[in-house]
Image (cartoon, rainbow, N blue to C red; front, side, top):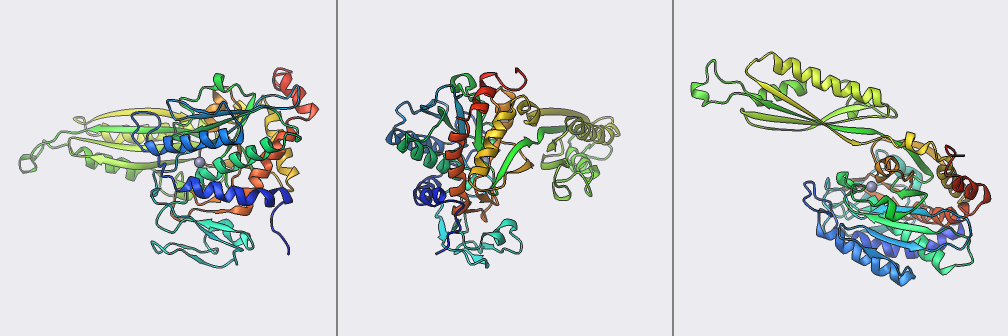
Length: 434
Ligand SMILES: [Zn+2]
């Protein structure tokens, strides 16, 4: 019988990978938007405790869960002169869709047709769900329709765990020392916040947090959040004549004045940036508008921020009794400039993906990963595919075949980093230092 696995190794890894994935997605670990401690929710600690115990079972005796919810462990290498290489995935899931009571369904040997899920009226139609049409013959994993699946990023967690277990059981395979870290709160942009790069001690690392098979991402958005606070003058509307200055009305006018036929998430693609006002609220006295701003180019990002500022200043400035505050919060940088001095980190991943018989697809991330900030913090960290799709929604799905390819890529990554040229590049401290 023909197998649509990318390799015999992927096929061998698939059953154990599915078992782990099924176990992890059933644990509710939704991140909480307004975090007061790390991690933001206790379910992430439950994930962490389970992973520590499984890592110890695999033989990684130093595995531990720190107070902030980060799991760290080491798989010692067996090749002299190879650098320490990091593998990273996040244990939290997005707060954008329900994450409690996930009951995954495996659709074996997918026939390429419409998948109707039992709950919530959720339907996956290959005509509208991009990559699904190309997965006929794969085992497709979905939720039951009323929750997200949690492939983002429990697919990444399960792939790292499966590959590390395979490498630990096969000491004859050449490998560098791997440092593993499972992070909390990536979905609320805090995954790198309490990441101890020095303690981690890796030369370079990879997040397993991408999507389509073969993807290798070394470029993310540069991201900022702009909060406008508008202060008006409130009074009982019955006595308001010539006195009331309605802050909510001013806020609405600002949002309406921003471009809507360009520079929005729904009108842009590829390398284009956008302004996305996503929250508006308050009352007549005081109102706020929160917008995220994204671009791959830092100068363009600044132009978008300036556009919001001048638009708001013009509208609020026309009413002398109203006051405006503009607060700009830089969220994460484009990782590309921070990766550039370490081309061997991307090269190793490219070789590993090729070794699995896949074509490495260099794509840009219209978003950020833990790697965006980690790269800026001195740990060059590109992103590798996981096989999951339609993240942050009840339609989220994953191909077990592609997940198995990702796990196999990690196994190949071990060998790639023991090649003489990459060892030498790392020993020289990257191309910049060479
Ligand atoms: Zn993710």
